[in-house]
Amino acid sequence: MPTTTSPPLWAWSAILLLLVCLSRIGIDMYLPSLPAMADALHASDAQLQLTLSVFLAGSAASMLVCGPLIDRYGRRPVLLAGTAIYVLASIACACAPDAPVLIAARLLQAFGGCSGTIIGRVMVRDRFDPATQARMLGRISMGMGLSPIVAPLAGSVLDAAFGWRAVFGVLSGLGLLSLAVIAAYVPETRPGKAAPAQPVPALYRRLLRDWYFLRYALAIGFVYCTYFPFIAESSVLLQRGMGLSPLAYALVFALTVSGYIAGSTLFRRWAPRHGPDRMLALAVALNLAGAASLLVAGSLAPQQLASLVAPMLLVMVSVGMAIPACQLAVLQPYGAQAGSASGLFFFIQMAITSACGALLAALSDGSAQPLLWITAGASAAFAAVILATRDQAAVPALTTITSRS
Image (cartoon, rainbow, N blue to C red; front, side):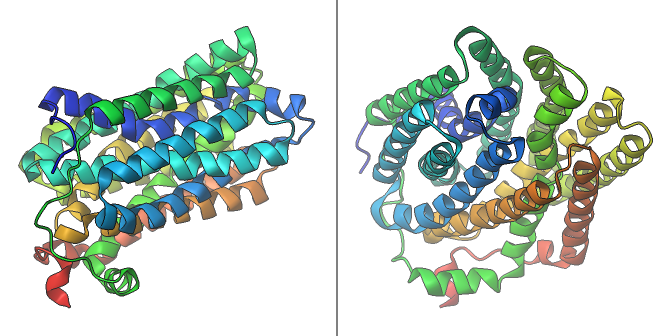
């Protein structure tokens, strides 16, 4: 039974945006402060970039743990606990005396905050029909696209006025707001007559042998890696390398990721008519074109801002289409196991992205070359997954994975 009165549709949209975007804001808001943080904590740029890779590792662990927990104990209690961890970890980030403490606090911040990432989307599946799910996921993706535009701008203003610790103070406040909203307005959405959950190891073994599932889990992981290198490297490349101020960097970053909003808008309008797989086919074509253009332009004119920004706009459009398409497709078949299936799905995405971040940190040399080549490689892998598993998209999804026991 729900513990609170169920909100209307418009309120659900606002609440889900807040829950899903909380961890995303935790990535975007502090990006303009990375060089200043490195100087203040007497750390290298590579050490501070590690706070981003560690955040992704914490996200991956959160996905794997939260999925089975929400199937067993319900969506609401796990969401409350995760958000409370996010608040405490954000306060620890704000008070961190050195880089190792900051890195550890970022790990916990991701672990707690990413509970909303998975639970928010599972709630969409719990409460809405597939057509409404497509529209809701499109809105969520648009909101997530706004985060890289608004959050770095806000972070740069906070940094300039109060210093980088204020950024994490604001993140703590947003976490507290989320905690209050969950407590007051978010009901339990787990189906009351759901089938008994399978043992988690058996369920995960089945999913990892299911090519329908793997098609979308691998695709979202690789397409995410086509723009993650820009997120991780752009702060240093554009501020230290090209001399942009934190505010100018935030504006350029916002312009670049506006392509994500455009792609999410196209998905929201076209997906109910064309379906997720046609949207993915279009996303592959755009992604390959953007990554190839980035590799060529960035190699020929590495100090030209347009060489990075213009191709990344096209990449961002494709990512804005592909991410909600993968999420919509993978949410449908698994019924009572939606939480565990979604947890493994997002774990695979975050694990691939975390590996990408570790590779990027190892190759980072102050030039744009690691960004160019990793983006191109991830784009090729995204296309290969979609093409190699295209027959799996036509396989009818089972109502619940428990029917395969």
